[in-house]
Amino acid sequence: MSSLGRRLFGLCLVLASACAALQSAEQGNSVTDPLNVLFIVVDDLRPTLGCYGDKLVRSPNIDQLASHSLLFQNAFSQQAVCAPSRVSFLTGRRPDTTRLYDFNSYWRVHAGNFSTIPQYFKENGYVTMSVGKVFHPGISSNHSDDAPYSWSIPPYHPSSEKYENAKTCRGPDGELHANLLCPVDVRDVPEGTLPDKQSTEQAIQLLEKMKTEARPFFLAIGYHKPHIPFRYPKEFQKLYPLENISLAPNPWVPAGLPPVAYNPWMDLRQREDVAALNISVPYGPVPVDFQRKIRQSYFASVSYVDTQVGRLLSALDDLQLAGRTIVAFTSDHGWSLGEHGEWAKYSNFDVTTRVPLMLYVPGTTALLPQGGNKFFPYIDPFDSTSELMQTGRQAEGLVELVSLFPTLAGLAGLPVPPRCPVPSFHVELCREGQNLQKHFQFDDSKEASSLRGNPRESIAYSQYPRPSDSPQWNSDKPSLKDIKIMGYSIRTIDYRYTVWVSFNPEEFLANFSDVHAGELYFVDSDPLQDHNVYNDSLGGDRPSAWMLP
Image 1 (tube, one colour):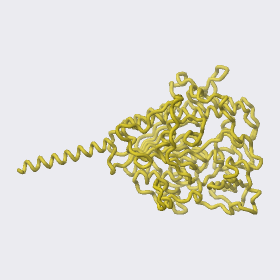
Image 2 (cartoon, helix red, strand yellow):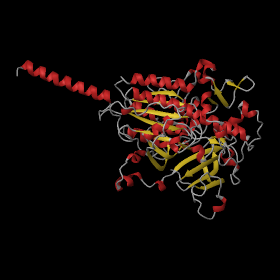
Image 3 (spheres, helix red, strand yellow):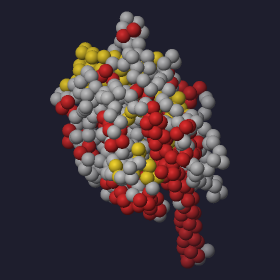
Image 4 (cartoon, helix red, strand yellow):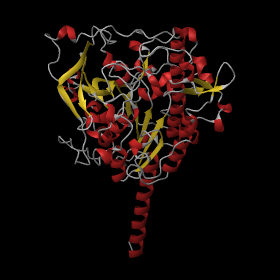
């Protein structure tokens, strides 16, 4: 072969190799390609979903995601309020390390210059993007959603967000009010749209741009609903006729509940429709008919958000990104729907700390899409003929949201940040949560089972601050300077144990020798946590000490 022939042959090999690599990249089949991450955070969502066994709520698109994911049955947030929880799981540090228990400080200034999940991905070559409510807006994220540290481009907030608490709810009198219950005709609201609709549209546009981007992406999208006010398209009410809505199974304040543990749900009381009921503070019960309406609107808001999640995942499919994108779905905390006579979050009960958590990892939790088949076709929740989704893989052990940082890093193929020393205020990159990758070992061998561990040995920690021993106007959301008591809670497979101890907000120190009250609930005999046996067990089986993680 002549010299020219050899050069032409070599060029053909190079071109063939390049074409094959391009085709592989387009199909998402290259084993060396880094995985993208789509991180979905829903505000105030408890596991009231079909995939968690709820028989009433219509959530077909989230259920479909769960069918292809590893679903964690017992996932818990570290504090049941927005800003502290989000800063905790986005930094991988607990509230006692971020020193954020309220909404009024920025961790990089007041605690330490801690790295965040998106910052870590950004520093490892990812394009990181934020849509909607990911960080809590305001002081707690430096009025910038932690930009530019965490994000490659400016975070997006929907323009209609500013109307969320405005008087846009049409009341029976025909006037506009700032109500708790706010089903709307979307055509009549300002801008003719709602924040979560805008966020979905923006996220899809970003996915379309990223399809041709050479670098991998980390796209976080935060949905507002079912956070109050329950402002959602009114047609979703039709899914939940009031006659089908039951009350909470335990809608009373438990006799043995310490007053410090009770949250008086003051933010609900400030809404015009709730204020008109003239409910006594702090324990006055909500009228039964209004309880049903609150639950109806919460469920309707969940189904509304499910449609947005469905449209987003369907677009991921249409853009042929589902085969190379991890999808993480969770919430910042739960929400009481009348259990224990409480509403909203602001406590250590399971109903406020337990959250949905599922992770889809292409090729691991499900086979890669083949032959143009779609993993996430959009499902209309109004379609009564849609079939119930088969349950996917599940993990029963207790896990914490603070574990998201190491887990997402590991699943994406990045080095897992090291465990934090104690204290770790001086360490920028470390994590206080466990790496949950062991749960993605799905074979039944003894070795894999041993690696996953014994669910009975797993523990989840949470905490909540209070300004006083009795419920008062700021019990739900005390400012740091007003915190006098901290409720530290341990959840195991067998029990939930909480101690309310003195807390010094200037030194950020808890005094575990000064116990104001305690709670102890055994899961098997008291799954709803109605019967506090703390005082009954002072000389018995009560856990003898608070063990920090």
